Length: 138
Image 1 (tube, rainbow, N blue to C red):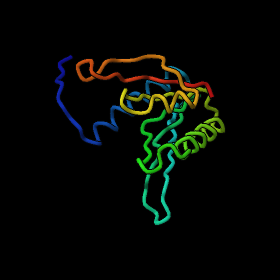
Image 2 (cartoon, one colour; image 1 turned 90 degrees about the vertical axis):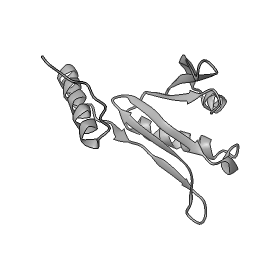
Image 3 (spheres, rainbow, N blue to C red; image 1 turned 120 degrees about the horizontal axis):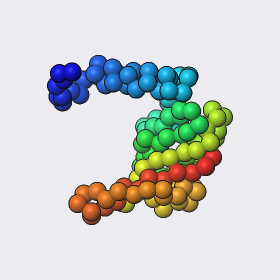
Image 4 (cartoon, rainbow, N blue to C red; image 1 turned 30 degrees about the vertical axis):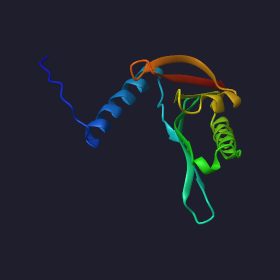
């Protein structure tokens, strides 16, 4: 087979690749594995976004892609409440596990207070920092 490999950041190519993996997964496990968005937004009184979660559930897993709270709200329990809501909704969907990645300058202590533990790590930025992979049983 004669193939070429090239950079391609188009939405169309990304969709084709995603569909290819979904098709493979369906054949491997015998059913559709669908990732369902699970997002939350924190708004202030005027309606400005000052935090949120971008996450998804699939099979029995909750994956947090992005978690952010503005500096003004940190340490006030808003992040804890937001994570708790996401975990509760994931449990309703059948999730038994949650995982995420965070960097050494980000929120590892915050996640540890919520019961997450490191299951892997990887040096980044020439070893100056670490990416932590964290998980929690729900």
